[in-house]
Image (cartoon, rainbow, N blue to C red):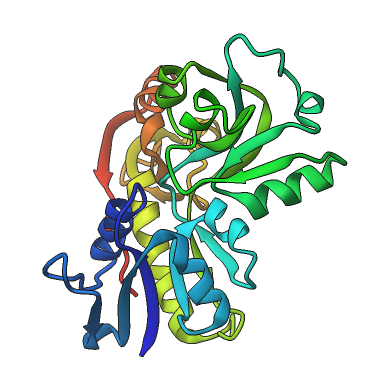
Length: 283
């Protein structure tokens, strides 16, 4: 069986579970269940701590895993990113007290930095020619400055609310942009058909979430203009109608652009515009 690790808790867990469920995989029935044998799909799901997933995958004891890019890079293992999963977007950034004189990346040199991501941060500072004392913390990193342990912090930022409540402000460019990703063990052949099947299923769900089918009729002389408006995920389908002055167009278009695209199509004479939700592919 293909061994796949998923987060047992944290911000990535629920989106990961939903993605797998919509892709046709069996999930655990209660929170105490640590391993699920999905015989129909020939996989085992292992519910692990988010911080440990990249380690297990990198060592090859687990074939695939769903984790964050930040956690993968901080693990220092040989696990390989396979695909972006469209959830859990965040940035890894520096934050300093509001009244602090620390405002630029160069100001970080020689300072004490509280962080959970030691390896990731050390690699970043080294690449910039900077040195700092890294204070490892497993949680509540934002409290380290107030308690006098650190001069500033480097942490994952989603909304920034927690930092603001702690009297901190972000500065400088993001150290890393992270999100939920699928990772592969270096021991798993990248051409393994089981990996290909799972990748297709996940991508089918992600595509269905991002796109819809748009069907409309358009005067033949305006087909090129219409196709320019709705080029689609792939090339749109253009079909002849009984009335030779009209053509039918079908295209996959981004869900969040539907209203704007419909307005533009109506302006050039389109009619009978129909929008339909996509069904995820389970190949």
